[in-house]
Length: 199
Length: 199
Image 1 (cartoon, rainbow over the protein chains, first blue to last red):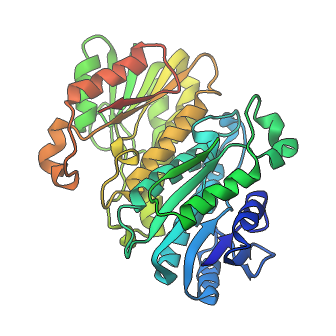
Image 2 (image 1 turned 30 degrees about the horizontal axis):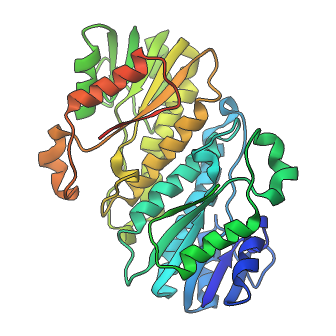
């Protein structure tokens, strides 16, 4: 398969590439690195990346930013930052990428554990993750030509424990390899409309 | 208790008022009718309504708009409409109303069944409802002075079946009175961070 992978340079993107890179053609997309450059929050850059990529069999995303702040410091603009980037950025992958996606091809988006298992400072992240849950379940009903869509929702990764562990007290972590396999389940399997929790 | 009820004139708002009106002081807020006027999408109007209301024991919302369209016709602006109104509008009730809410006072927000049980044309609604799930679970961790927050997530109401039933094929409906009791559970009970599903 020809797979367009957004956020290929990040911790999750690298895990996805390790799982899928040996048996598929990966086109890596990053904001600055990778085979193609695009920014989730910039629709024009996404449109250009899809055009360059041509026909594809899977669109996978391992990118998306939100702001972490105490609840009483989160402004409308802080919420809108995550909404435009991690939430509507991934929705745009569906609206802009669908035309080039093959019959039966898949979208695999990324959320995270925080809407089920919240932390202090994470209200914007929890909001965006929950929004992606709802969007994916609904979008699956209306995609044309057998196209599929799933959401990977991982706990904190082992690989991110040193950097972010202090913000996730008592949370169990998961190896990146398990997250990579969750993408394989979406891309190589037949499921649609599923929240694939890696916990 | 002194309860500020947003969306008091709607089907759900009326059900909430029927449940709570006889034993509490209700201040009804509507876009045009009610005791006070405010629009969820207009922060300044919310600020003014809170100022007029003074000290309160509960903030309840039964309002919020989103656009229903086929997935391939939903634009960024269509999504943003629901995000600014039903989603960030209710988030603003928390950020702007908290100061006047008593110790142990409650926020009760409204979502709906569509993020669990989606329908065609409902991707924006499912997104916004899921976002509210995540937000409420996270915000509950950080509210000060024992303040609480819950989300009421009802199925289609019996009272709305004639108007909207055709869009919800095979869905079971629930009586508005049950939705009213869900608000009572949040406002008069002690729970916080809960999604109160009325299905």
